Amino acid sequence: MSSEKKISQAEKCRIIEMAWEDRTPFGAIEYQFGLSEQETIELMRKELTSSSYKMWRKRVSGRKTKHRKQRKENVTRFVSPNQY
Image 1 (tube, rainbow, N blue to C red):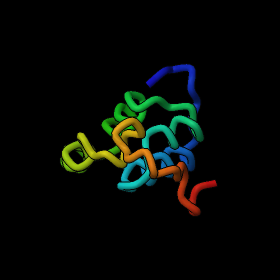
Image 2 (image 1 turned 90 degrees about the horizontal axis):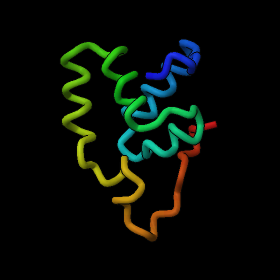
Image 3 (image 1 turned 180 degrees about the vertical axis):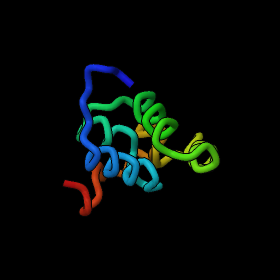
Image 4 (image 1 turned 90 degrees about the vertical axis):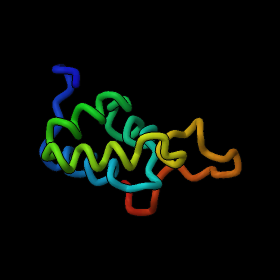
């Protein structure tokens, strides 16, 4: 993760929560917090235990809902009602 970006603990918690959600695309995290998909992955690797990180990566790898380009065209949602 870029050393320029200062992320508060509350923001880290929210990013991790969004990354765990199956239907929240990485683009929503980037839009809200300015973290690219790779930076989000790096944050998850740093903040989660090894086993939790591996479980998360296995689950999100290739998941169509996490990658906007792989989503169906008729899905126009960008953020969930819980996101601010």
